[in-house]
Amino acid sequence: MSDQLGRPTGDNGAVPRSNRRRRDEVDLDLDRALRGVERREQHRDGDWFVRRLTGASSSKTYRCPGCDQEIAVGLPHVVVWPADGPWSDAGAVSGRRHWHTPCWTARARRGR
Image (cartoon, rainbow, N blue to C red; front, top):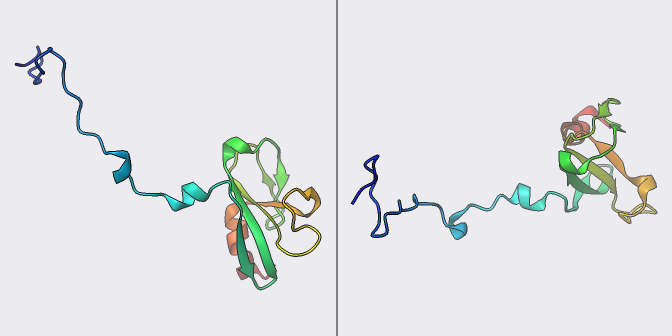
């Protein structure tokens, strides 16, 4: 059997679904899975907690300490805070800094 366009149909006249990837066949995107979860990074200037923020989760304008430019509302970026010391708690707002992701990544090359 087939429909008016020549597509094969089942016994009930419905066009069968195209083949779709099963959920267990989808590759894990580790970067996407970790977004929004802080991770600890070791650098020359100490250990830092780093959390990636999506554009949807940013609702304020911040100033990046790496380039001294604004991080616009809705722009994905990272929030970092020292892993040791008085600001090691994620709730301690005073120690957190919002960085453009490329600025944070390149800061070791700039000597900051």
